[in-house]
Image (cartoon, rainbow, N blue to C red; front, side):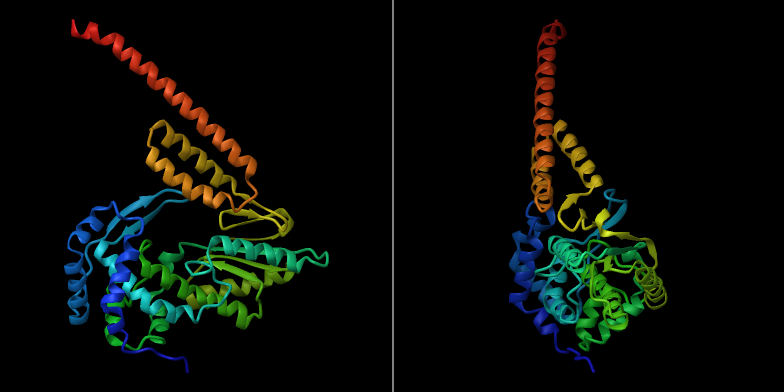
Length: 354
């Protein structure tokens, strides 16, 4: 039988764990009102959270919901800062328990994995399978509304199989109900549970179907093989398993030769090189133009730091030079426009005064 863990609540509410969770929750949020309010009385807040968890009087606050529209429209749930601290404290303890049961083919939200490592692994599979000149194909699948389709009762069967501490289960339920469907995008616990749910897909592929040449990044999966027919047959079995065992359906799928490139993890991956996806480049150009013309230097700086870090993992030298030239041209255009407007205002002011 799989090992079940109990007496975890003391570790979750441990003062050192809560302080570590506080520092993790603060990353990238040090200018937010929630963080500044918490920081002013951090010792008292941490003690209150510890006491509320141990007394089972902890109640999450009301989350803030907003929409993002790229790459596709979806609502994001932003928990209050103190609830983010509790989620980090919870995941610090239970995360490694579920991490130990995940397969190496899962690359989302895992230490030592991530998008870039997943892209490298995908390219390595292409080269390995095609080393003798064989034609390599890729089955690419994407689930429809993955987070919103998670069957919570099925998820809790997997949680209960590992966690026997009732106090810890009570705390998990504060963020993840036992019944219903769907996980809120934005919660740290949702990332963990979405990965745990996806592990069932990994096990079906690796243990039931005997397939190891695949990479999963949350709900995106790429499976490699040298037989187009086998991948089509595998797609049918996988789709049937996901529908009946997990309540998941594919929004799209394709089987293509890897020589045509595979759209995955923000790149178009080929056996010998990686390119940025065209829609990613279009969005970047749009944002650079918008931030530059709005003279929002701080937002532009943060966006460029993140996007360029992603772009440099691809063969994108010429593209980066082109974007730099576009940015310089826009900056010059904005500066000239601002000077013209300033002169117009200056020349009109005496007339206005008269």
